[in-house]
Image (cartoon, rainbow, N blue to C red; front, top):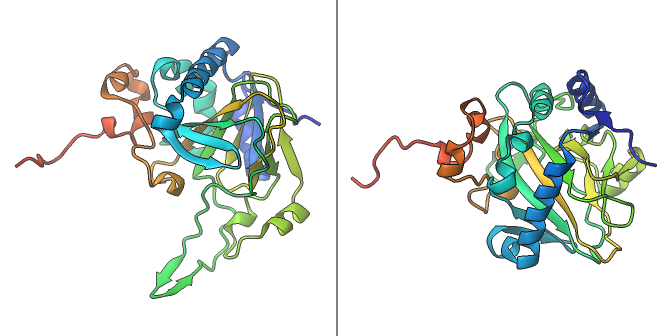
Length: 280
């Protein structure tokens, strides 16, 4: 049964989304982006996929017959209707506070025959301490912490039960903050699984701490989605520590970003000014 999606065009969308993410760890949305823009984004991703450019230049990892590749903010991705959509910014402000920024932009392409991914969370923070060889978990209750990173998943095609939808375990983001997080069997037993399906134009976002996985693509077509991550400014994604930069925008492209939106790209190397001349 399809998830009921929040109408992103409605004035109460940010509040409804924030409440859903707090309760469930995710929310589905429709009407956030124009379909004409989504088709342009799809054409750009499929061009890079079919030419092999994504694998050569942007590949981060292969997982269970699907691959993730970092994308640059260029071409249609530099359209403010994508990265600075007014409703999107309002929603992320409600979730992450007023100083949120872009953490990364990737595409995940589930190839034909992709199989079920392992159940996982993208980046919990439990404030552990390392004392010599002994790791000591923070003893307090972290279950009420607000999100520090949120992924907006934007499918670039219709997502069905057959072509590799994402499964999310509703409410499991709270369990991820335990000193000893639950295993897959406990998560499956205690939290209901929801499948993110829908027509082109429906997207969903989720707290970095919610348990989720990609399901099999049993069709003959690749299933491309965008994984657009927004974070509080202090957070750095441990999944992208081995690549650089994880937020790609050139100096020329950044110069075309309106001044009121430039802080969104504060984590990009092009946004930083040198304090010392290292050549001396």
